[in-house]
Length: 147
Image (cartoon, rainbow, N blue to C red; front, side, top):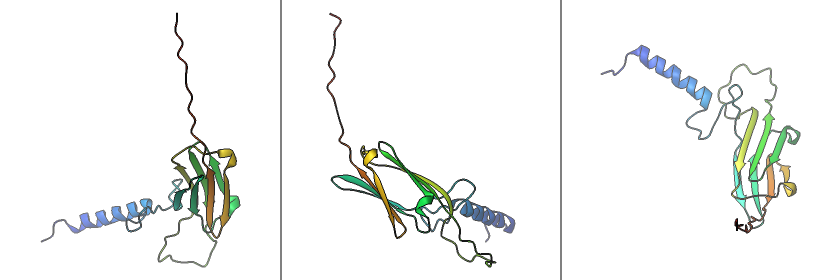
């Protein structure tokens, strides 16, 4: 027994394929396909030591000059662009998982950092951002009276 007619099933399959093109395949968790200005998100790890937070990004195929890092109090913003390799001889794509195009990503670290002392290195396709911790400060506030 068939639950739906063929026309309904075909339309549902077309909708599923459109959603997969826009959002990425559900078989790849976190996958996002470049679609307009939405961009993509590189894989990112966040580590902590006693002295610093370390952000590690997988930026294979991206030149360091094409990446910008901005450090604010507890947020690191990374943006850049991975350009597709020009290959005019490709006539059909059979499988595609590597994302290309612009990306913007922000990560909140669990505490304040010294943005002036932050540094980064790029090696073997990985960007490592070192964020020295900044001590949390507190102050006593005196209470004045109208007397």
